Image (tube, rainbow, N blue to C red):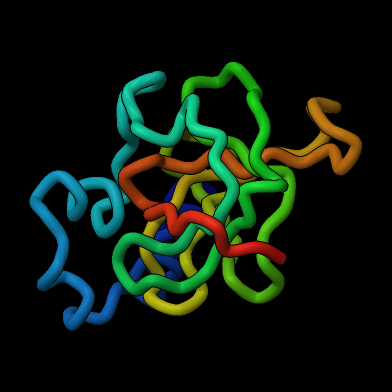
Length: 144
């Protein structure tokens, strides 16, 4: 059973490979998180305690992902959003910790953003997109 899960994880990861044209503008640290599906240390990201009005886009391809109105303080150590811009994110199973989680990636370039969690009752929408700051870029004053 474990071998089957690993095989399907490999197929999913292989099919979600990032187009090389987006790699050119990324730093080695950004590649580690966005391409190699790493995680920045909690409470270390520039957008963890950041609450200006605007739009969050993918760092690799500038695809709009989240509105600032949907950002909230979850005290988890990473930026949290309880909604996404429709069609901006893909969800894929993540078996990397030996249990199933749901990874979120940019729908345009397949860059790793973080994970999504449901059922925590942190907001009325009952969903938390837990995002690496290094995977996103903020554009001030863009509104819904």
